Length: 303
Image (cartoon, rainbow, N blue to C red):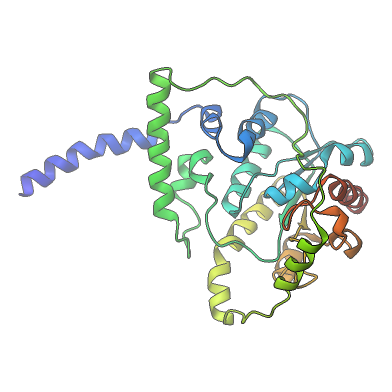
């Protein structure tokens, strides 16, 4: 039996080493995201690595950011400072960190704006193991990271699929995307009765987590935000946190406002924007009118 185990281990060592050492082309990783977030991933990659146009301000966040920050309008209002919206669907602070690392490796923005919401999400972003390098997947923030082993499995499975598809020319080739701006939103406006019902539902008091339990869960996302701040300090970037809650938020400031203020400058849009019912496409996302108003306000604030 020991001999069998020894043979299994000897067989697995080169396989594991191969999976660790093989590094699929970075663009190939983003090409594999064609069915995710309206194929926005390939544009994110190409804006960083293929588009030669520089930018001075990078905005990072979720679909809230995609829909709320009109980078083209901000570009026209920030005294020749070019702005790019790098929002990507869904939550997970480790993706913020990975994208910022890539941005700083290729470009030299002077300002980083990171979206914050009512509270921090305590899980890994679904595409983190797909686009992160192997070192970041094998050596993530480990403390209270429930997704650590799932991310490793997903990472190596995805690398294997990409290697196979590339070997047999099964991967669809996508044209390089050279658009400068990442903003995408809707012109429609949500019904007032719908927004009223959402605000009423969100105003109902919910028993908060115990202090120790909340601190336990928040260590994971806060650790990545500290890494973001350290990257900005190392590269002499200004760091802002932009509060982009859903409609009908139950409080005017994010729960972690003191933490954000200690890492950078916290920006909170006025009620005239966040509570304007004409500015929302659905309960979570601003429409184009709301994005334009918020972007004008944001351009003024960061100057």
